[in-house]
Length: 457
Image 1 (cartoon, rainbow, N blue to C red):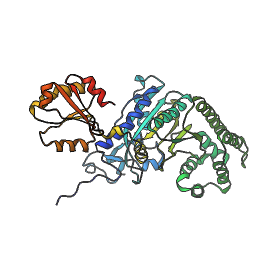
Image 2 (cartoon, helix red, strand yellow):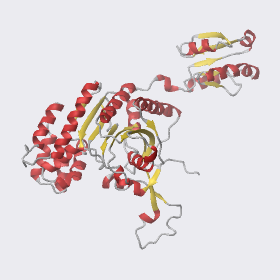
Image 3 (cartoon, one colour):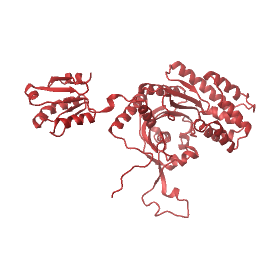
Image 4 (spheres, helix red, strand yellow):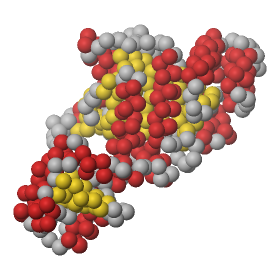
């Protein structure tokens, strides 16, 4: 007995209904990107491992899918040396930002800076599959590189605000700054532990404060240093109050008495950005979150995370400022900032909140019933004229019972059906029926405008 086919864990098939819904998300995001002047590019699914490794931290490197050089890659391997570098020189991309940085460096002579691009492509991570977390998933990224202005950060916030407004999802936009997190490490007396501190803080929502403190202790931080960080994480108040409290701490007001110039610079950037956001009239709530760390090593300035307010799920969008990424590939002093929409999680949110429009149920607007060869030949010019006007039309391929053709329209959620027979041919007309309301009208064969008006009500 043949084994039942399956797909790898953490991946999914998408049927026609799901693809219509996913394309609704992609098209919405794509349209907003374009209104802010972003142009689309694509990069290969696989990159050289030298491009990917070391860009995501140790934890990220462990999640890279590596690709064998060939089906018999082990045949010529020297087993006296480490195998990984011999048999795997390429890997599936982990995100779209690092390939974008590689693209910028490789094509720098063909690019006008600041360069604003977006990508909508799949990425892969060797993670443990769970609800809302997949091994293969799509990201929708927008980045601008070649400018340090925080107007770019503002526009990303506006893009988030616009996209989720169009999708009908209420979100909370959280913002922090990696310079502030560097300031954490400096004022607690462990400037060399900034990565360890940010990786631990980034897990606060998942594992809680006590577990975060335990992790920092394991990394070598003293009790006194952890208390300084705890006091920061527990700060309350609105944005201006949090910035004022943090400014005092970064200016020597913590228990250590250490001044952090880097932390103060980060607070200046946050203050400017929130001033822009207020002036721009962003509709969704935006807050400063001092626990927000986003564990990717390449962030150097503002960092973003977006949460759905009415649906329980992880982050559905995130990003930040990076100053050193292209320098790794030989193009220094090229600052950029970007944001990534998690399309798969957004899909789960829209599905859970029943936010997909009813019009997505079928791509076909009208089904012409098959009453015989003569009738089909009569209808072909009508179908062609409607398609030329952008109307999706199907002609049922087989001359069979009308009930079967009605059932087909019902299963595919096709809203309009045309049953045109000998009487209509003799009269030079076409009959169109709204299957939801039962409303039925007859039009002259050439009245394409009238037919479109009827099906567009």
